[in-house]
Image (cartoon, rainbow over all chains, first blue to last red; front, top):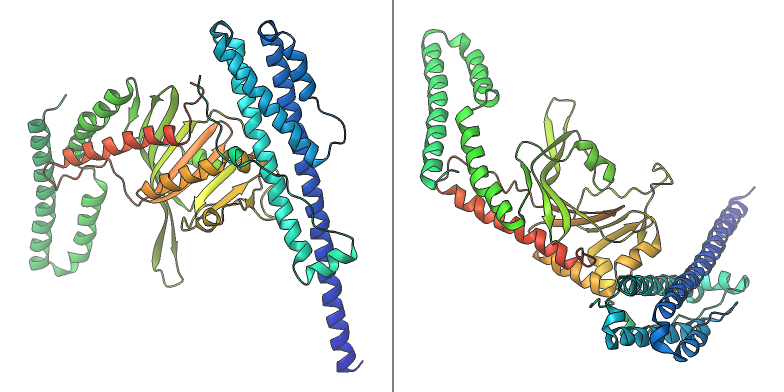
Length: 180
Length: 291
């Protein structure tokens, strides 16, 4: 085998190994993104559970409002990112309403159960923010892979394309303030 | 309780004992150099042994008196009931099992204090970790991995795995990554959205979610502020329900020197700094939020 053929074989070998590594890293990133999205679902579910518990505790003070709030925060199967974002915002509103009810009726706000649920809901909010940030961080790395040359060639060949970020309101970038 | 005059008297006594020992060794050495030069080396060695290994009882008495007066008193005044033990520190295994720092082959820890501040249980201790090795020519060298304060606080939140944050110039942090680390203990590096933070700190975690959960943008700012005010290189670790804060400043702050007059005031100042730091840590990391 001449030196030219050997050189060509070495170059091809390097390209093949690099391609396999790149494909694996793209696939791994896709798995991480899916896991991060599942984390968002888990956080939304937890938040929904705590909110429904809070609605039960405050039902005597809410009247018909309880059903309206409950309807607005319902989670559905296979929601898109935008729908998840909208549901998250609805939960945020529900949370504000419930906290306002707690302030308007001190006898409710002073109960241990209501206070515990307030702490729990703020904790789920922090978890939801963390899940969103993990998702966006993974998306950022993944999108960089998809657009940066020469990885973009491999990404194009295996059909990997840029994915959308989970939008976070600026107000959500702040820490949750706990005031009781 | 000792008055300042008592402490000064104890310091003088310790100093006198120190000079008596030095003079004793020098006189014997001088006599032997004159009458028997061959024994000089032997006597020099004996002198070193006497000076280095036979404890100076008065010095210990002076140090304990200063610590009783300045350390215990100040901590009790700040936090009420506290456990203070100058001769004890964190067990080597305790620090080793955190997996936060390389351990070397020399370890010592003293000036242990534990108590409760704003409802948050805490403890602190001075820690010294070094590695001494000899080359083939018999020259030994010591690399100090850590010398400074180590604090442990009860952490109010639950994380699913370990989380570690340290300054990039904190050289002997243990990262617990790589194939030689057990998979259940392995951490990986996390890059957050804040490029400035990423440039200054290394974040290692077992779970990405934990890192993003604890290190909110607001917390990153707080850590940066806390770090810039710390008098040394800084590392934190969250392990189970404990927050470990290690500040490597190559100092043993609560150790009085018998060679300096009024050193007790300096020790009091150091203790006041320690107390302020404990309070600030609890406040900055929101450790008392559920109390």
